[in-house]
Image (cartoon, rainbow, N blue to C red; front, side, top):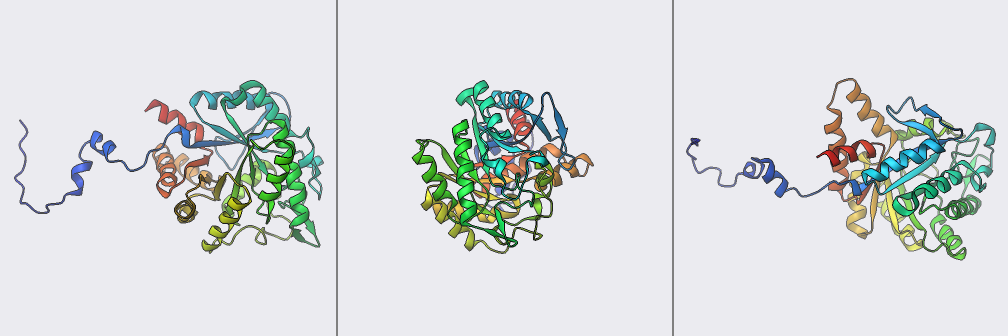
Length: 337
């Protein structure tokens, strides 16, 4: 029989009692992370049986449509609910107007149709709505005299959303941060009898330096004309403003809202969830992924533990789900456990 040291009676409240055993820790766990919380961002390129490494994002590749369909099938088998598509657009197809974005035969639309033909409604498909993968100047909207204009950009963004939805996209995800774009997209979709298509608005998207590796992944201009996107993406100093942005997007018809980036803005996630009690998501962006994965590859941190701890942070902050490049690796680990 084990001998136990006699207690002195102090302290009476011992927080460590509930941490003593693994089963007890599970009983008192306040938040749970599951495969159902994960959305996997994927990059698609033209070609057949083709892969390209994204050098600034270890273990992340651009995939041709045929290989992407297989990869999405693997994600489906792991129980991941949805994927988010991002195209690597041939530079020859880019121009100042981003006109390839409204081509019904563009790379994204072809990829959506292929995924839906193979997997139907067994996994959701989310499409980014913004012009930066398609413009030669790298901005998310149209430029006039060096300034990204709002209303003209919204018109082409709504057209982009429409062709994606017609191709079979389940969730339209406008990431451009133009004013009024959710209302215009909702109106266009409803008029086309696509009222079942959901909108997940990038409602609080900050002008962040954490997007750098993503811009390599989609071939977007790393330093867009004018130098930054601060005239339309949010100031990292502001969180009250984020609540106003979210309120507007909900009023305009957003079904879900998102905060981007993720970990540096967990306070914003918490405020949004507490204030609105709507489905709230966060994007663990490319810079976050590259930072953690790069450190793990160098042996500076335990990669698996850091991955799971970082994802749990989003749940603790109030996120209903997380867009993460770790989705497949995390799903495998969750399944194995």
